Image 1: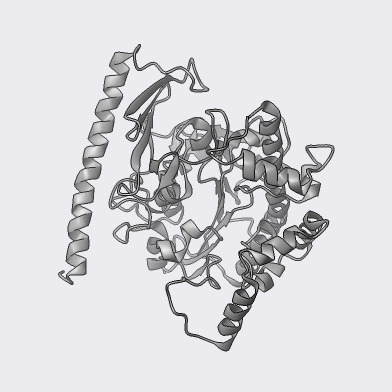
Image 2: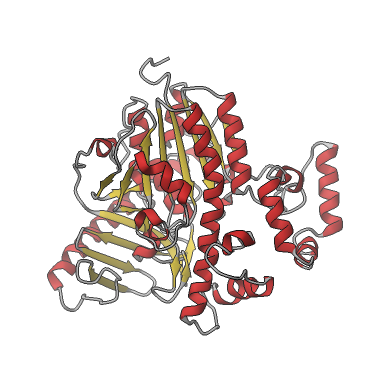
Length: 485
């Protein structure tokens, strides 16, 4: 075993759809995450962190492969020719654990590679086109699902129960292991208390060297936080019908409801309450880390993308590369060091996560990785890189797609001052001066021709590389299908 990393642990925490400007540590007026804020008092905060993909499939492809989403075969499913950093860790005898319940990150989409333990919430779910053979227990589960038609009947029953939200709040907070009992029969996901309990149990059983990744889905829509968290930001809880109206009628991309500031504010309250719900569970996790893993441990906390609240006439995070959706929080804390709060204002992106983790374990960076190690920022050093950042995905009609067959290219390229957006479907280009227009409202394509041409050249060069890599990937796939080495 490599003596340089035998005692080290990396705990990687990702929170789906978390916006930095909804955290008090980034200046938000509500104290949504006091326990997170307390934990990061000795962390480095990165103030200019951006995702390389505006939705989970593209962003996590960038995190795990340290390669921009379009390159080397695309992003969903994660191409097998893209080496991901858990594989490198595993090859170096570092134990790897992952736990989440986002279907986009399941083994089905190739995210289980390189993990010794991988809990993705899919173990009781069956593909409809696959005839399942197995134990009598699976047969019983299947029979019960057929009897109850669980996707529809159970949901109708439980949503019809008086005080349903109070019952759900009790279950979510007091009995997180109820998830294990209900998962075979309902589409229930791992919630924050469940994940934290499971993670603490795994940390007790698995020693260094160790990499552990957990992903929280609670801040992702549909928002349905327990009432007590809503009451932190509002005098009265929403009724069940009010919640359903906001999520089912107001939030959808193609909503027909007129949007006004009050509806936007109501959705923000639900979203903030979900953040607060996660934060209460993080308190338990942080307490365990502080008491039991107080040295040789790197904790990284970030998000895969943000969330829109009608800043550009849409909610959510579909087909949108505006800053409310691509700017994300990032905190890194080395547990053995009690440093004063630091901020790093350099450009940082999700492709930097993998090289940073490898460097902490004293492993060499993989030659195809495009990101850089950002650990020097923890010592107050500037990061040496060209300040150019690309975010990209495929989309159609405002809905994110998995590849260029299903959708059109949507790409954002930015520098500290300028931002360029190319929308292949609309055949449009947008250019913002972020210094004068940080909310991205004034399109300057007809005003700043020189900047437009510069960005257009960068975009064309990048897409040319994408075409070359796609052709290489097609050849590799053809040879693989023919069983030719």
